[in-house]
Image 1 (cartoon, rainbow, N blue to C red):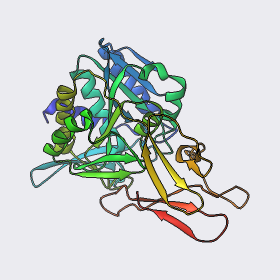
Image 2 (cartoon, rainbow, N blue to C red):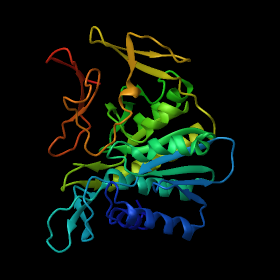
Image 3 (cartoon, one colour):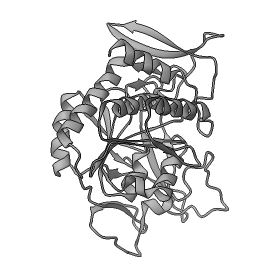
Length: 346
C-alpha cells in the first residue's frame, strides 16, 4: 500500500464511532464526498448513498459506519511492524491503554472510499448501526429501494482477518456457486488467499439479499481480534481486499447477476430444517420463514421473557475467540412445549 493510501487508512481508523453515535464518522464522510465533488444522498438515519457515473447496472460496494467500541476522542492509531507486516492498532493517547481501533468496519469504509475514487461507474452505501442488527440497511431497503434498482451485484468488506468471506448469512447463500457469477468470482477469490468460506450470522448484505435478487459477496477486510480493545488491522490484507475488488470488477463488468431466491424453512413439529432455492414464494402451514422471526431483531437489548411467545424464535449465542475474533455463532430454537433446545450449526 502506498503512503497516501496508508495515511488515508489511518485517518479513517482514527475517527471514533459507535452504534447510534456515528456523527463524527458521518461528518467525516460528508466532508470527503463534498471535497471530491461526489453527489450523495443521506437519509434520516444517517445512511449515505453515493452514485458515480452512468451505466445500466452498477457494482455496489458496502460498509457500515458504526463499531462496537464506545466513542473515545482520545483514540490514537499506532503503527507497528511485525515480520515485515505493517499493523495498525489503537490506544488511548492519554493513558496509552489499548482502545479498540474499530477495523470492523472502518476498514470497509476505507475500501469503499478507494473504490469510489478508482472506478468510473460505481455505487457505494455506508450504512449505520450494523452492529446492533443491521438497522440502517434494513431501513434503507424499504425507504430507498430505487437506489438499488440498477445494481448489478454488491460487494461488502466486513469479514474478519484476511482469508475469510461469507458464503451465507442467516443461513442464506449470498450467491449461487454454479451460476455465471459464482464461476467468475470463485477463482479470483481463491487466488487472493480467501479460502475460509464461512457461514456467518449477519452483516448489511443480509437485508439486501432478503429484498433484491442480485448476487452479493462479503469479503475479508483485514481486521483481527475484532470487538476487543486489542483489535488490530493488517495493512497488506486491506490492500489485498482492494486489489481483489478491482479484479472482481474487471471480471464481472457492469452487468446484472441474478441470485435465485432462497427460502430457509424449519419444521416446527420435528425440529429439523430444510433449504430450498425457488423462484416464487411458497406457503406451507407446517413451516415458518426465518425472516419473519427477525422482524424485531436489531434492538440493542433483545431478550425473551416468559411474557413473550418464544416458540420458534431464534437468538444469537456469540462465541468470540479471545484473540482472533471469530464469527462463530449458534442459533437456538426455543421449544415452548419443553425445556430442550435444538441447536443448529450454520
